Length: 299
Image 1 (cartoon, rainbow, N blue to C red):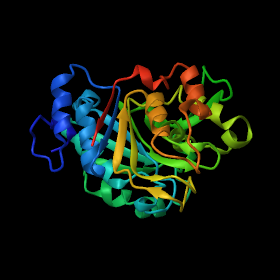
Image 2 (image 1 turned 45 degrees about the vertical axis):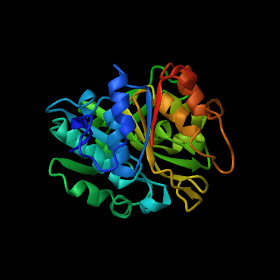
Image 3 (image 1 turned 90 degrees about the vertical axis):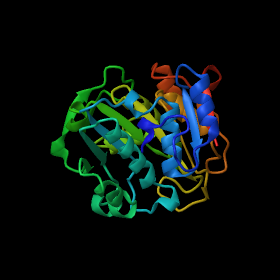
């Protein structure tokens, strides 16, 4: 049974009693949920607290799930999205009635190697109506305008994104050599054909924020099962086992909360110190002021 069908008292190993209290005490879902308990349990708890996957996915809809699978590294290193988080999302999507789910990434290493080493190939293989897709063919991209872009004016994104009903972003929490920390907004770069222009033609942080004006997930689930505190984005580095996920509808708020989960290359950061988070907030894509949000933490 996936998150979309969870009820108070449901038989789920490790289900925190606090979740039942949350469901009973709140008439509307919280803005941000931090849930712990292992990849599958934490993901299901977070989804349940947000109102279940049926809040986002309706029967017969087509869904795109975007993990971070850019590197050919196993999940224990924290550089890629944990496959069990993705599996829990697939469970919930199909229980909500999804007709088809595409799990996609434009990897930085050979796709077959990345999908195998990250565990995604095995995770997706068990679902007949799910497909793992490598976005490594330029012919499958379409150029779109970025009307709100300050640095990014046009960008090539997968045509598939224009044909689906729901977009779920599933980044992993890790340090990054160029942006200090890589979270949900940064993960959107895995949906771009030419990422080099972000690094050489304009300010990387502004480009990420501009990209977020055209790539807008309905749900972000930040994998913090194993946080890569140093050595990102590919590792190896210092890994902190938080054993949890952060979930929310507001992509800026999820990232703002994620910034506070750990230190990044020995630095403690505020959300406003991560420029792409600040710029995205200035674009009106969400809030980084956590004091205005209802946040639920489930141990």
